[in-house]
Length: 107
Image (cartoon, rainbow, N blue to C red; front, side):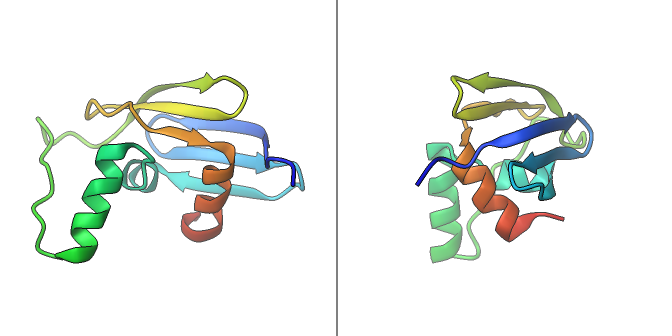
């Protein structure tokens, strides 16, 4: 099965990521969803801890400013890396993973 690829991406640094897929479907993922479901190792471990114990203490940000995207870059031709204002930038969002998020968390 060929990898799903977006045909258009539009990052709104204050709101989130608009994605259009090859089949013409369009989705919007908020920055909060993208950050919470980051595919980075530390975010995956935090989600596991939260599933095991709902009282898990979440890491706090250095300031109370709203989360924004500072920018994004392509990783090869298979993924996108988003740089968040809280300093997080280690998540690499493969196209298949973004497609999965669109199916479960898009607005």
